[in-house]
Length: 294
Image (cartoon, rainbow, N blue to C red; front, side, top):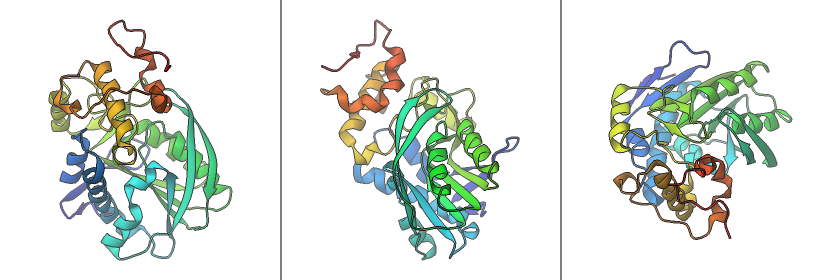
């Protein structure tokens, strides 16, 4: 792995079983400290971050034996194939897996895999996805392994947890597969709702200056650095604004500049998949969020 590449540094996390490198660069800081970044600006920021990931990994990705495992739909936001071409001049074959989150808790999730197109076998896989419990990537890899063997898996994540990396690494190790993780700015602790990845979580491993910055940005609240549905910033921006409104209500940050983009939802059905992120707070008399949509 290339530790220092074009203004980006990948630092190994010591004392943990999964092979995790925390990546630091200005592009990731722009992405993870601007919750209002949406649309084209968000896509461009993601591509800049992914290019750094690929640059760090370029010497570990065999030219004729590497493919992407795209987890639909939010894996598309990572733009790994475009980043690979821009950084190395190479094509990146793609396998597609659609997943559906059926249930979520702090340390686990139940994932269904209703669709897969696995036509690009390779000994080395690269996956771009947000890592919370790790269950989604485990489900995707399990489906891939039903058809093709694999020797090495690289996971790149703008925001990922230590617990998720451990779960994925354990799954792969039991099958003789080597793993490595490149995480943006931190190895996050996972919030009790199974969604929040905050710099202020007590189990988050990161630089002290990021903790100070997040504390100032979110007024000391353990707000997720990437929201509850990462990728919706460009794939479903209205939904993202609505989820942001719920977050602001939950954290009592409705007047914070960090949530200036937020917009109260008129139709709560579009937020059904993220309901576990906030339903535990519905008991609060001060949180004016409907229990059910009409």
